[in-house]
Image (cartoon, rainbow, N blue to C red; front, top):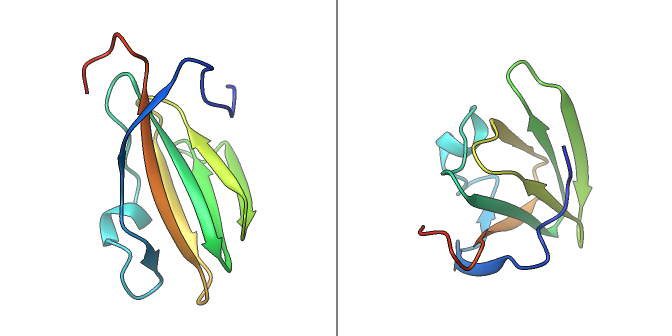
Length: 98
């Protein structure tokens, strides 16, 4: 699967910044995005692992300044290093409802 946002994708939501202490537990367990919604994991500081699939088929090691794309309805989870800070941006195509 491709690891980039479609050219026409439009950001429609962004989370607050999470740390190892504030990350919701649901993000560290398998979950997915809604149909037609891409997630962009943006690492602001430190590092984290973004695991894709159930069972895991791909793991992206992301450091400060890196991003990782999660495709619509793709099962994934994050594992943070103690110093990690990140936020998530959500994108969809102009004609998709979100």
